[in-house]
Length: 255
Image 1: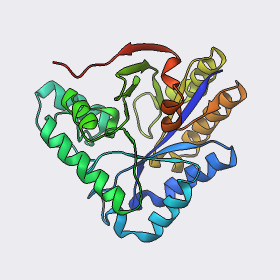
Image 2 (image 1 turned 60 degrees about the vertical axis):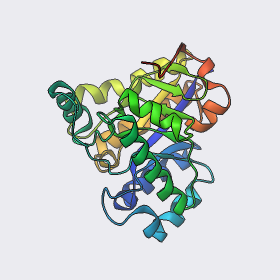
Image 3 (image 1 turned 90 degrees about the vertical axis):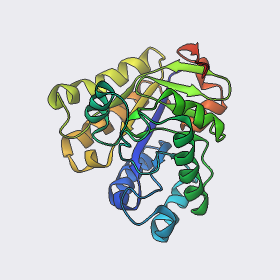
């Protein structure tokens, strides 16, 4: 049986309306999701200072997972020209952890975890903005006690070192190849689910206001469910040995 993990990105007070619309659509389908929260000074107010949104998020966390999605959600600078170019294209200025050293990554992760704790959450997972993280960031994530992290192409268990090669399917409003990408979105997820492969789907706030992108994304979720995929959060997936599925490798933070 295939598994499906759906992540809702950029969850913050400033994206509350879009986040709630996505979660409502997933709730109607009985799909639990991983909510990737930006708790820091991305767009004021800070997470714990917006009690109405925190209250909604605590209610949502009964069925969904809350995970860390950075601190500022803005590129921190540094790195070579090629690295900066990749960050600008892939993460659209949000590649916060793409060029950080271990100490700075650890500092930002701790700030994010502290703000989430102030709001009443103790996450075990981390997805860097744009799925881009330096090798030192992965070391820092393990340093601060996080259990797993994700990238465009894999999920890494930071405790066991196991890595699952499983691409995430995501479609952003205004992205390159928007028309062709939309046509392939549901086809790819259904094909992976039918073949018993893990399915990963990412939803972004801007997508929900684009009728075509919203419908395509939800059709992808429906197609995976129809093909027999079981919806799990990343936390449950890791805890239940989800990394036994698919093609696995060993991850190491050794230089």
